[in-house]
Image (cartoon, rainbow, N blue to C red):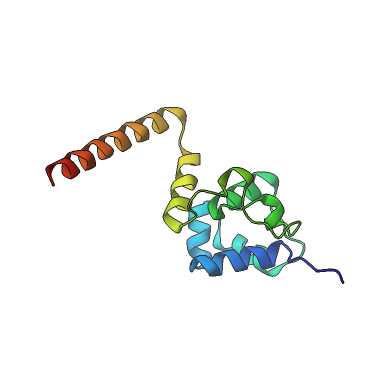
Length: 124
């Protein structure tokens, strides 16, 4: 017996629903019109181009092949052991949008936060 995998529109809707976000919120995170998300979720003929597929896969922390229904394994190979909560997903998405200079600034800010946390823990 063969198993029919979900197509892109079903996978996108399922991932969005599991995350508990609206089409409007997803569109905002992907920086695309809400009407585009609606079209992706309703049309069998509306599959995004590669660049946008990558953005969607990164946002949901899944493989592109999972989005396209080619596999039932959603986890990217190098991400299987990493947490996949909403905050982490958003962080990866935002990180991908930064240029090299901003990434260095973000790392410096994280180091400052880490030092402050260490200081607080050492006082306790």
